[in-house]
Length: 397
Image (cartoon, rainbow, N blue to C red; front, side, top):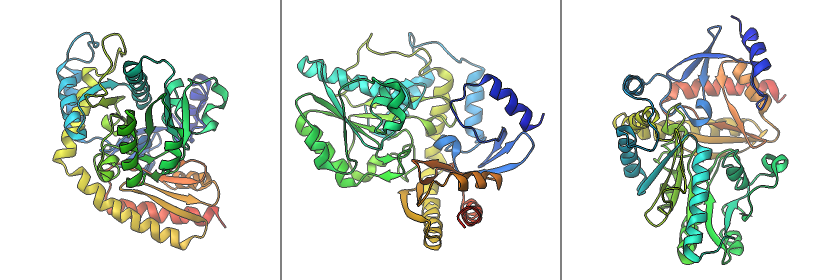
């Protein structure tokens, strides 16, 4: 069947919440995707920073297939071995103490918000606690996650949101301090803002927030759903600042395509007790077997080393492109989460790129976001860069 026929069928039955690119993907291999008509695409989006290991990593595939043949689901009324093993490995690489597995990053943020509220009520018995979030942030689409997302565009049609959220300026510690009062129970932020335009936090900002939260007995929540799991060149971007959060949200590359997220706490923030929170599917044996394999592969196959080597090469190539084209205003990021900021909306450039066999996605209104599989090589960067230049020239004359 031709792609047009599939798209016509999809438009009749899928809720139109996305303006989908007119491509119907059929399979993937390595860092390439193939559509139903056999055309090849170099993937520099990775399913929005999800496919860290690329498509068909054999170790990952084998672990998931083996678990399908054993046990897929039991519920959280019982223990299961893959969840225990995945939690042990995740605790080890994060330096946190406790794990709650979810089905998505948005659900991880919901759990983090509930943790902050419960921490506050345990501390002083009040029910009017506030959380400080950051402007231009993105934490998800559910009502709680949307409430701490610092972009009115996502919120406008869904008010009233949950109350008690105040927004500070990212990388401005004084603006955070000015919002703190005796009701503040937590501060939440991304160590690298993704959807907001690829803005890394200054190490001094994260260090200042850690000291402020310690001083005021507030929880520090880091959202590493997009920038975590090795994408920045360290396992988690907060490591660049030498501080740790009280609550950490992870997802995306943790499952390499399987729907899994998690929020982790230190012992101080491990305040949720039976009846406070739950999930029917979260932490089931299938997705946890996949996550466990992902964590092993990171250790055994040199993923971080590749991110740092190829990320530096990507930085160099994008700097060369930035210098060549005046329509590019800025270049930001770390490792394999980088962005080029343009004078105007670069969506036409990204659309031209996919027509030329390279998948690029945007962020905010004027940034092309580069979040490829963490296993790309320098030759893939060269391939992408050549197409990107042609597309910039075609769309900005």
